[in-house]
Image: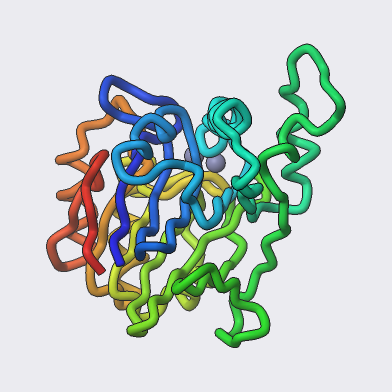
Length: 257
Ligand SMILES: [Zn+2]
Ligand SMILES: [Zn+2]
């Protein structure tokens, strides 16, 4: 399985940097996690969106969802009778929130024409078959983060038992440390630099390094770095806490699991 970085910029895009998006690719299983500005264009390098097994939206902040609208147009106007609706797993308010941007009105099915909305359920206690979400060859587990809106972190497990964690947006949380215990790869947000992040919002790189160390993650990748910050500083700060090499996630980086 590969995890492809489609977007890594925190909050807004920059030249050659898209907002949040990851592709979990275990052909023929393709799961897109978050679809911020610029992610859709980058996705075409790897898979036709019609072949996505599912989309997961960790939360509904604009930097994680805005490309759902152009993707909706692509799926509608290139449709054939053989095409299916693509499942979107998200919080239970996703459809009503995303419908807020529905220019011109239509028959009320602006998004449901091409997407099928399903609700994420968190399961931060134990991994068991009842609560995990199985998409093709991959298993996903979810836990709520400490963020200003309802947000899910996820852990993906492969057939071979490899574990990849993605924090989505969160401030430092010991509950989440347990959720990511012993992951092979942790993709951790690190919006800020300096000692502390902001409560109920984001982590600093230093906190991300400490977080990954406490979770005993084997490899640490930083994402969602504020676009005006120098990522090499984030790397140094995170490494001081993690005690090992930290990699700054960049667009089109492929993590082999
Ligand atoms: Zn964000
Ligand atoms: Zn957010």
